[in-house]
Image 1 (cartoon, rainbow, N blue to C red):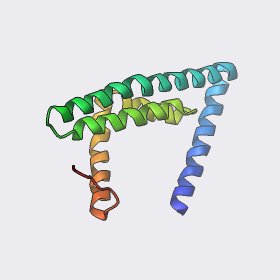
Image 2 (image 1 turned 180 degrees about the vertical axis):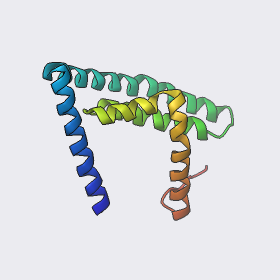
Image 3 (image 1 turned 90 degrees about the vertical axis):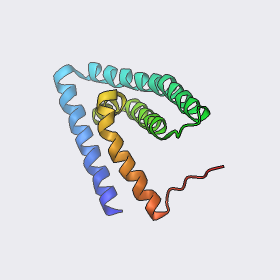
Image 4 (image 1 turned 135 degrees about the vertical axis):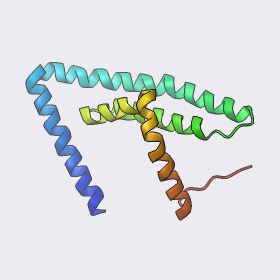
Length: 129
């Protein structure tokens, strides 16, 4: 719990420092407009790209295939859109990395590793009907 709390404090301080630096370089109003614009883009991405990804998962399942890669793309797209919608430049950077197809491939092995780890501990269960 201490590691999570410490990580959160470091993240908040880094985000605040980045906001101050960018605000000094491009101006406070431009910084605020940039934050609002990325939030609007993030909401748009979650709505549109998320629905497309969910449809892709449904089509994969309907075709009788395992939805693994399509499902992971959906989760990463949704996570990227949510991070883009949150105010802050670090979250925007990570969100953009999750949304771009060529950089999303870097995050897929991490996500697979995390899922396997959770499944081994019994914290993540897949139910088949």
